[in-house]
Length: 468
Ligand code: SAM
Ligand code: SF4
Image (tube, rainbow, N blue to C red; front, side, top):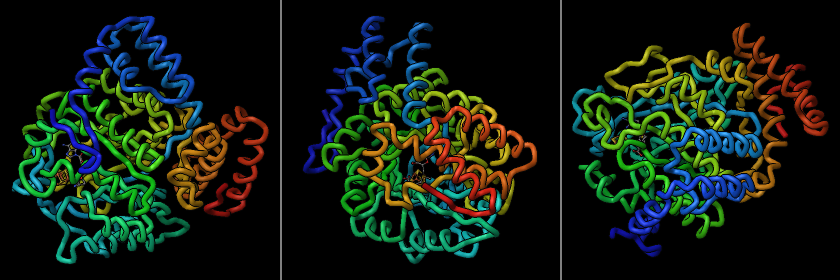
């Protein structure tokens, strides 16, 4: 068994996962219903509970699983969906991850690290589309100045304005850092620090990472410990689904979460669920060793929603519009929109295959995604209030746990949505949006409606960035 102890890293106990999976494979309907009833209490699930839900294939039980996830999502998160855009600043990379187009030995990719001026131009395009949140992404190799390139880029993003708009929260997905670098990232006013383990399965990890720093499983799996030690209390974890058995990955991710909760008293702020997509120069990406089908993918989202009800789930534009729509209801709380995965992609317009990281499944622009989300009855939210009002880590979780976050989220979601509609939306989207706002107000309880109406009135008077 490959195990790490807490003194040398995060304990991922593979034998324990195998044993839990074997015990959960009984498919007893009564037992499944017991677990679903427990999930409705919003206290999360144990590994053995989760293992009971994983094998469900009976259509009736599947329907019950999805309905329970929907109920839990609505209870905690309401009907909002937070929107963001990734910003790829560089595709230089010193690692050899077999699934990624940016891997160092891939000669089919045009390498590019954006200058600060180019970053400001990319941000101007995103701000003028209406974005307020950006996820900065980079390969693991920086231009001459080293890691300070990332810090300067964050500064540039926050400093760029256009019209009434600016980016109000910068999250980052960059390779694991040292404690000192994490401290610098915190000082740069980072929102969430995100890094995916890709696979928690040690043998698969070794097979997929054939060069560079990323070969060190332990350095990566302990990244969140260093981030939290450095005071970054919103961290985002994830698995690249398709590399190893998804059931193993979900249970390993739960061990990672339990470790963070035990050590820091708070788990990750978000979980990402990327599925392997085709990538230039990657055979693994074209034929994933453990491809996850659409039904299993929906099960992953629903099970995560029930297992860790207070953790946000992020759905990227790797997925098609249809899959994204289906998973909104099951527990997704944040989505990207109008994304480009090639550095310089927003200024250039069309995706440029020779420098993008992987192929996208949803090519729609922000306006169209917002209209679609609104017509499905969800509130597209551009809110960044929690982070800016200091509601992160423990404070966020304390508020999320009794369901109170909804009382803040829904009014803030509505006011930032109205700001978007007023400043950036097409007439069609404005019409769909105003209808959603009216319907949402009608469904709210009196107190939350009053708070929302107050914020909305300020936005209609022309105020920006009103929050509660
Ligand atoms: N280079 C840093 C790292 O690896 O942690 C951060 C940025 S990397 C560009 C962001 C994520 O993209 C990776 O963690 C991986 O999960 C994902 N990714 C890589 N290749 C992919 C593919 N072919 N399809 C979908 N996602 C992919
Ligand atoms: Fe580099 Fe990250 Fe791609 Fe690996 S996943 S090759 S580290 S950019």
